[in-house]
Image (tube, rainbow, N blue to C red; front, side, top):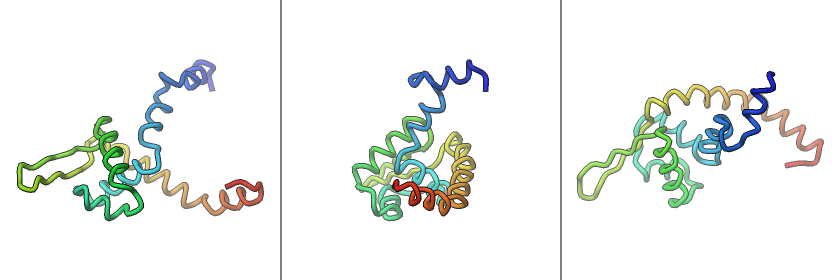
Length: 123
């Protein structure tokens, strides 16, 4: 690897990889993206039912973050009560295959990773 590339990764504020992974690499964002990839359109309560271990507040924060990065669309319909639907943007759709590759890699390697952690006494 060239030294200039390593130097770019070391600059936390301007490193694209670290910056982007920090935004969607949290506990919930990838799951939301993959759900919307599978289901195409979901309402807030539907997302909450699929991810029942997330609080409503954390789901709202996660959705706002993903919307701010233009990974998801938030569409509000002028009805009573108001209806809001979430879907992936083109940018979000372009991320989906990469996440699915990561899921495949994790599924393939999780057993060995778990064993390594046990052998080394780590979680």
